[in-house]
Length: 300
Image (tube, rainbow, N blue to C red; front, side, top):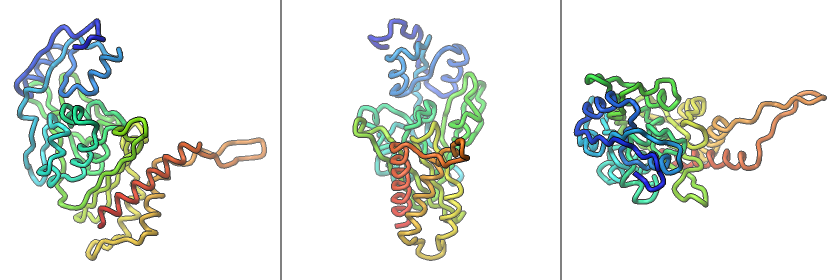
């Protein structure tokens, strides 16, 4: 596996179908599934993980594409970032395509997969806030051909975890046919790793704006109050425009909701308001700017 892993995996299985992969995991509970390996191999090389076996998913063609199903796109978990960044996919789900194009250098985009981005649940995963804003769901494959579906937010929040022998097979994304945007800010030392990211989706059918903020917390955050407030200001039957002041207020609302002020400090003379460190205040302003620009672009 790697020159830095003296205790490498002893068994490598290469199933040809999703159900075969599930059966392999059920037969070898200590094995780890691997697709692109962009997160897994980093953990192995750093000594954080020593899998006893690997179940490779690269030969499962059924999860490497997508199909249309009941007004939604059923995306295979094996879709790579590079594939999602192509124009035909961008016409389908623009925000997810934008996130995929920004997911790192070419070697990462060519190997990393949508399912791996979700399963590893790294806070900086670019696809995660987009999936949260789109209110996507996961189709989980289990032993014996079983399938169950859960909202992606429940998995990322740890409210519904993968059970032994289960794999993420597909991601169901509602097709809104409406504007959607993704923006992110990166650090100077890591041009592709997000310091903060924002996805904004317009849903004319429900007359709502959906927003999700990534990288600032262990999971994407949905500022529901900010969403409801700005949705009430939009003329959904007209031009769907907002004044610059409303866009700025929305950004500030999102920033404060995702990075709130600390609890008041108790002193000998009473309670005094807490203050955020300068770096955290800067991060809040970054989130506010991203949210303002993302909504402005979606409305434009």
